Image 1 (spheres, rainbow, N blue to C red):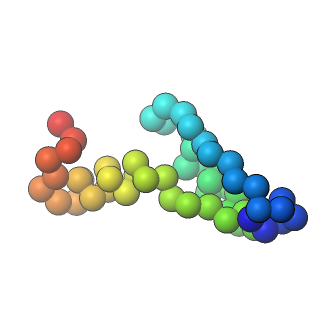
Image 2 (cartoon, rainbow, N blue to C red):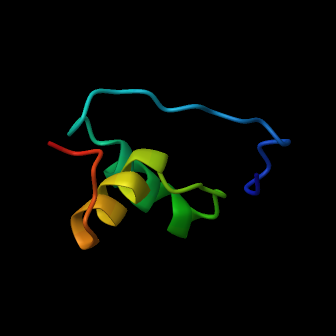
Length: 55
């Protein structure tokens, strides 16, 4: 991580709609390294194709 946080890692966990992506979107421009929430990738892939994971 940048911003002088010495390589610490933080894991965000919350229910769907809990604000994780919003928080990540605010942290990234402030110099924090972020990783896209894996669930978003799965939902996006399913919605854009003939997915079988989502009901």
